[in-house]
Image 1 (spheres, rainbow, N blue to C red):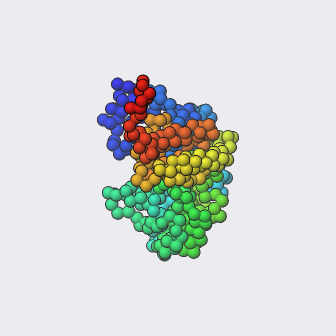
Image 2: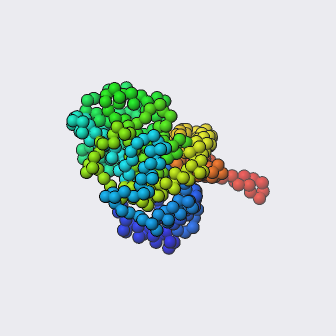
Image 3: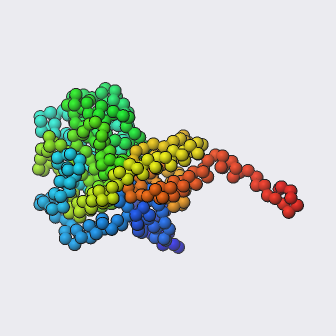
Length: 421
């Protein structure tokens, strides 16, 4: 048996079965490349679902983690730690927000947003404001509060009553206006729905939400877990939209692979969660904060935000041409920056294609039912984009009905006498 087979057999005996992993066991990575335990190379165009923004084993990130581990890993939030304070200051400087709360994941950051919104109004004596407006196809996490706002029913099935949350169509300001009421504490939105299918917000949508929230006296919350940290070619996904949220959630790329999440708020919400109302044992620990500071330094030094914009435009061009060349398989391409989706034709299931792509040596994820999601590290090169999309093209070309028809035709072979058989 191969090393992979032995480890997979052990995994199937000992790991809890809530995931459906591909039959690959990874051992190491370098930049945009990862290698399994048997030495096979893959191009990582998933980046741990938009997490590994500076790639694998970046020497500056590795050194920062090692140096901090030698100094201090954990102290708890009964005390300050220097890295925590430095990261809070840096994130506030970059984003224009005033306060930072640290946790360990995007789901936790979104949980903090819900508690913030409800407790803000509770503290003002408005106990009726508990309902949240969220969107169909949204994804905000797997914990119960975050799950209540997730707009895909299959994720909520079997877990009982959720809410109070009202889901409406993404991009539909009239639907949001109709759902508003005196009990709404907040509207939560993703600048691009990543998990839901790489769905783009229409122009003016987030600024329209800002106006509706202001008119209703509700908070606007923006989930930047997948779209933040430069992913869309700007530091925050909703930068430049003409509106500012009251609070945002960050995670994924924030630590470059080290678990960390953050909620950033305006000063007006600084007292919404007073001592004793919320916390996180590991949130803001020195190791994770040191990793995040290193990621931000790399992003600056290597100009990765601008790179995400430029490489994202190249990737969009490659995917658009691929879709045009394979119209029986692909419907089109969409997305922003280095978060892109290749939309497959009706009847095709993206997850059914991923295994073939893995065999070809490129890692991607599904977004919704029929969208292949591209979220490579921000350090990806033009050459790697060319190579990766060429691998995808080769796989999808074999799935074209015309290619399958040709494969099923009788083979014509030249006989020694010059006759076809």
